Image (cartoon, rainbow, N blue to C red; front, side):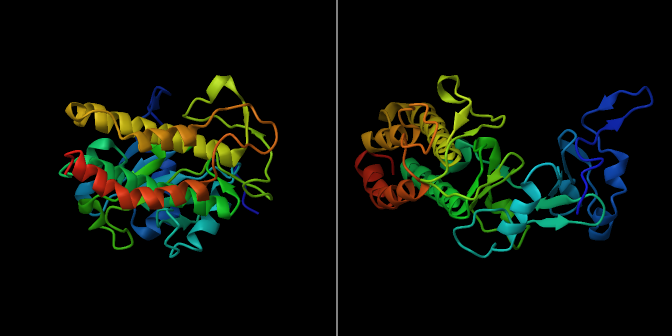
Length: 296
């Protein structure tokens, strides 16, 4: 059994005993598994937990120190064992077990509206395509009885063309879901699992609630993320062309739902499978909407 003694956070310290948040701790630089791979972290990506190599030294990688008190390691073991499944939007990465377990993954771009619409003439089509991928990934997780529990723009990354070209295992323009440190595995699946106490999340729960059906919470976060991206794309980049189409606004409201504080199985919003099926249809009609609204 693996022991979490000495687990994260790992900090670098100066001679005066002060934490150097941007630096790499000596313990990580001496990590035997990273030395075997020739991976040399150069700066802190998320101080104490995530570090990155220098892009000038070849393909850029991120190293995450795994906390063995969470379910992140067994979840990655399951997901990486089925990495060729097209519905699986886990980023291809390597679990390094020599020494304290760490995760080594390609360094990709965080999801941002700029990336989705830059040099594109069909904002709705590309937005729907992105969220179809993301919902497909969440549906896959839920089929394995895994709830992510912290879906937000910081935990979704995009394989931009330049970065994908540096990593043969990465698919160009594909969305990947990362960071499973607060994720959970359950015996019961969607539609059967009662509410749990939520971990600390980046998306604030509605009405100050602290308990949620975990699968329903993922759908709420999907709706919140889609709403934020839609507002930015249509109001900042396309403000002269009016609000988002009504069907998009309806879909977002459907995902966010009307929260009733369910203590058992939640019926306030759809399942990931139902949401993905609607997105199947929206992907077909989005180019037509773009064409007739002048967003071509």
